Image 1 (cartoon, one colour):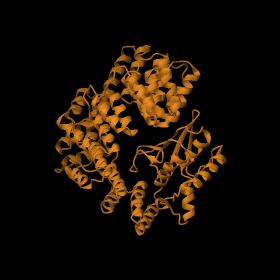
Image 2 (cartoon, helix red, strand yellow):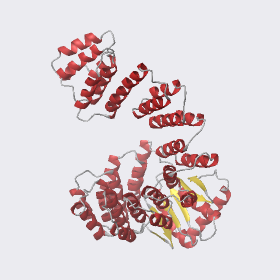
Image 3 (cartoon, helix red, strand yellow):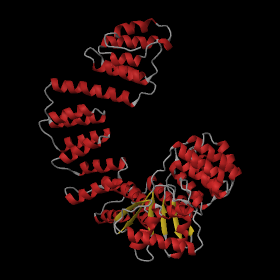
Image 4 (cartoon, one colour):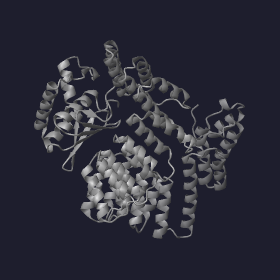
Length: 584
C-alpha cells in the first residue's frame, strides 16, 4: 500500500482497526511520514496495540520524533530508548543528539553561543553523535576559529568516512598541530591506505611544524608493518631512542609487530627487551612474532616466563607456535589448560589452531574427534587448513569432502578452487582438475591480483605477474631467464598442474609460472643487492607451490636466505629447505 502525507491519518485509522499484527501496515512507513507529535502518538498507540514494540528502528524513529517535535517530550524519548532490550547505536545517537540540540537551543536563548569554547564543545558534541551537517553549521557560523575547531572538524569527517571533505579540511587549515597529523595518519591506517599514511608522515617531517608523538609513531609503525618498509621502521626505532622516548607497552608492541611483519626477528627481540613496562599486548606480540617466524620453542619458552595472566590471544599465539613447530603433545597440554588452569574458554580460533596442528601432523582421526566436540561450526579458515593438510599427507578422500564443503560455503573465492584442484592434481585426477577449471570459468570468477613487494635502499618496489613497468625490467627478466635455467639444471619440473587458468599449452604455463610476482620480486632482489644479502618479499596472497619449491632451490644455488611473508604465514628459505616444512 503506497502512503502519502495526505493519506496518513486514514492509513493510521485503518491500521488501528486491524486485530492481527501480521495485517498491520508497516509502522516504519507510517513514522517516516509523521510530521506532528499527534501522528507519532497515534503510531505509538498502534505499535502497542499490535505488539510491535520489539523492533529497534521504529522505536528509534519514534524517540526521535518525540524529542525534536515542538510539543514533544524528551523524557518520553528517553523512556522509549531505555525500554529497548538492546538499544542500537542509532537509538543512542538519536537521544544524545537531541539532548544536545535542546542544550544548543538553550545556549542560543541565553545568548552564550558566540563564545569560542562553547562553539568548540558544540562541534565536538555533534561529532560524537555523528551529526555532520550540524557540526559543519556551527563551524561555518563561528566568528572565530582556533586549532581545536579545525581538529574537531577533522574528527567529524574521519568518523563519517568522508575522505574528500577530510582532506579538503586538512589542506585548508591555517596551521596544524600534532593532533591534526595524527588524525590524518590514523585515518589512513584505518582505511588500509598504508602508503598514504607513510606519505603523510614524511610530509609532516618535511614541513617541520610539529614533532611526532607516541600516537603518531604507533600509527606509522602499523603502516610500515603492512607496507614492509623495514628501513623506515628501523629509522623510527632510532628516532624513538634519539628522542629518549619511553618505550611503553603500546609503543613496544607496535615496534615488535612491525619487525615481525617485516621478517626481522632481531629487531623485534631488541624492541621487546627495551620495553619498560611489559603489558599483555607486548607479551602477546612477542610470542606471536616468534611463532610466525618459525621459532616455536622460543615462543613456548617466552610464554613460560610471563608474569601476568594470559588471555585468549596469548593462547592463540602459543597454539600457533605448537602448530608451526609440530609440537602435538604441548599443543594438547596448553589447549586443555586454557580452561582448567587459566579460565579462558576456547573459541573458533583456538579450535582452528588445533585442527591445523593435528592436520600438519597427519593425525586425521584426532582432527575428526576435536571437530566433533567443538561447540561451534567450523569456519572457512579451518576448512582451508584441513584441506592443505589433506593435500600434504595425500588424504584424498577426506580432502575431497573438505574441499567440496569449502567451495559450498565460500563459492566466490577463487583460492578455494585452486586448493582443491592442487590436491586432485597430486592424485592424478585430471578429470576433476578440468571440471574445477570449467566451474571457475562458468562462474566468471577472477583471481585477486597477486602483488609482491620488496624493499631495496629504502624504496619499496611492487610487482604484479608479468610486470613490465619497472625501469629495470630488462635486467629483471634476464635474471628470471637465468633463474629458470638454473632450475632446469637442478632437475626442477614446473608444477603446471597448479595453474587454474584457461591455458592449454604446457610451455605457456611454464612461462606464466616463471613470471609470478614473487619471482619477479626475488629476481629484482638478486640484481639489486650484494651477494649474501637476505631477500625479503611480501605477497598479498598465498605463495604458489611452484614458487615455493623454486625458492627452496634458489636459496641453495645462490647462497641467499629468502624470507617471504604471504597471506598465510612466513616462509624462511635457506639451504634448500623452508621453515613451513612444505605445509602452508
